[in-house]
Length: 389
Image (tube, rainbow, N blue to C red):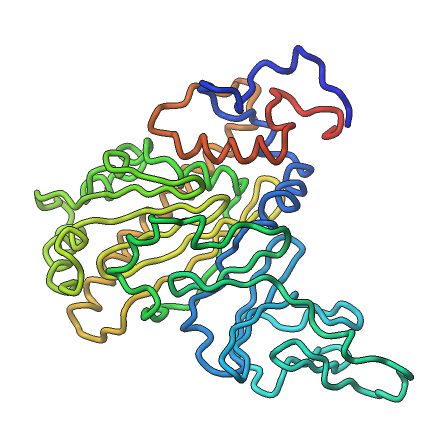
C-alpha cells in the first residue's frame, strides 16, 4: 500500500475526541464503493424479507448487494434457506424479485434444476456431461438467520449472531409482535442520487429534524431527547406532542392512533421509535405499523433505498385510516430526506467545503464513521492516497 504524506493527515476521524465529519472524497470515490462492499456490507447481516413473505413451499425472495445476489426460499420441510442466486453451470441469474418455484429452482439458460435445499436434481442433455457428480454442483448456501420475524443473510465473513448484536435492545420489539405481522405493501426500491453513506449519515442523526422535517417536528418531539444503544445498534424515541398539529393529516393521526393500538402498553401507543443496525439498516416502529429502510450502494454518489412496510392483520376501517395517515406522513419525511441528502451530495463536490464540526447530537453517525475507519483505514486521511488515484 502506498504511503501517504504526513501533511495529508490533517483530520483523523478515528482519533479519540474527534469532532469533524469525514472527508468529502470518501463519499465520491469508486474505489471506496468497492472496498465498502468487500469489507463492510457483504460480511454484515442484511435484511432480506419478513418470514410472512415465505409462507409456502417454494416461496422465494431475492436481494442484490453490489455484484452479489442471494435468494431465500422455503423448503418442503418448512425450513427457510438462502443461496447465491447463480447457476452452478454458467453463472446465469436464477430468480428475480419474489414469487413461487414450487417444483424447484430452474435456470432459465440451460435448464439446470435444483431442489429448494439447493441440491442439483436435473439438467438438460445429461448424457453430454459424462461422469458428472451432481452432488458437487448444488447451489452454494448463504448464512441465514431469523430474528424478530425477519430473514437476515450474510454473504461473506462470520458476523456475530443477529440476536447477539441487538442484545437487550431487541426486547423493545416484543409488544409489537413483529413475527405475526404481514406485508402492507410489496418491498419497494428507489434510487437516490447520493452516496449510500450520505443516506446513512442522515438516518443516524436527528439534529436535522427540527429544520429538515417540519411535519415530523410538529407531530413529535425530536428523538435525540430519548436515545439508547448498544454497539452497532441505536434507538431514538420521538414522543407524540400533546398539542394538536395545525395540519389535518397529522392532527387526525394524533387523535386516532391510540384507538387502534390497544394491544400495546400505553406509552408505546404515543411514540415513534427509530432503530439503526450498522452498517445500513433502519427500522421505524410506529404504534400501528413498522417499516425497514435498507441503504445499498449503486456506485459512488448513488444508492438504492429498499424498504418494506408491515403490520398486524387488521382490516378494520379505523386501522386502515390510521395506517394511511402514518404512511402519508412518512412518505413526506422520506421525500424531505432524499432532497436534503441530494443537497449534501452536491455540496461534497465543492472546493469550498472542508469537514465541519459535529454536534454531540450526531454521536451515532460517529459510530458509523468509526466502523468505516476501522475497516478502511484510508478514510482517515483528508485526501485520497495514491492507491485511490
